[in-house]
Image 1: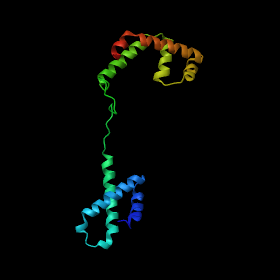
Image 2 (image 1 turned 90 degrees about the vertical axis):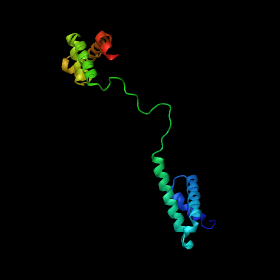
Image 3 (image 1 turned 90 degrees about the horizontal axis):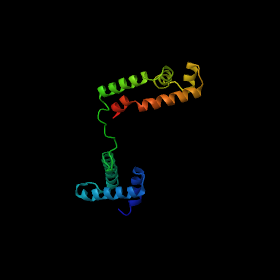
Length: 158
């Protein structure tokens, strides 16, 4: 073992990225070789046996590592919110939103629909309506304020 250790350690290092892991891998492979010593028929072919033990051990370690679970304080996925995936809840929110939008003055309603439903930029919305970008910003801001204060939307969101 002492005579062949540098060569076998190079083989182990080629299988791992970390020199310490390579030393551990070699020790494990040599232990397996020692346990199987009586079954080895040709002791002149020990290098091949140890190399095969290195590869098999590394493969087993790699497979085991893939299924490791790590304990953490919080689950990685957020808990689903009640009603978040319920189509009826989504439709009720959509209906309430449209009723609230219909309460807005026509100009604010047009700007909100173009900005958030048609996904136009402020500049594009201003161009379509023939007003300045500042007018779009202020009107949309006021409209969103009214929507936030709408009592019907408050009930649906909770």
